[in-house]
Length: 155
Image 1: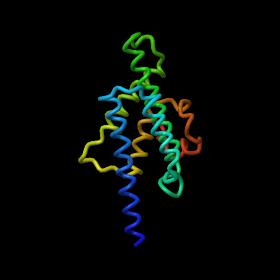
Image 2: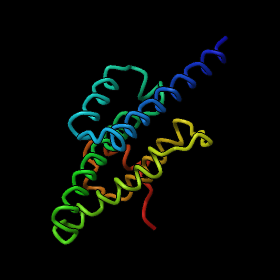
Image 3: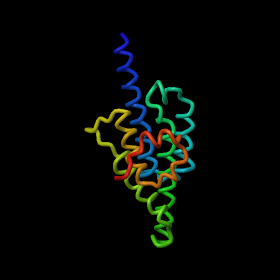
Image 4: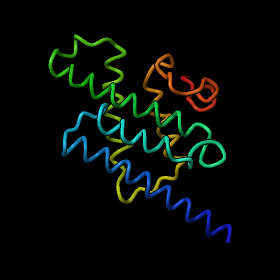
């Protein structure tokens, strides 16, 4: 009975994250919504009201990592818009990293193929891999102990 419950929770998590990724994809590619104000605000408020994430439920870094990924993506999209208007030379090196992050986030995180079946742990690890593109000082939404634990060190 417990094993069945665990499988149900895992399936629910899978469908929930697939739905979130679908909403991001649709809003970015078809509706062209302002990602920062409309989509991310709504998704974040929904997710904050769900008590099914974090230590004891998924992984301790889940909430902070998710918030940081969404914030970094929104910043990256804004920087890409600025780059198209003002040119690449007008952006700081950090702004350019955010733009690169947004591209990689769309390619690797959001555009998960139907043949790819990632677990929540694999998805969080991918999130950390993407966050490693940014300077550590920019990771302000994640507790420092989680950054120390999960952020891959440069070698």
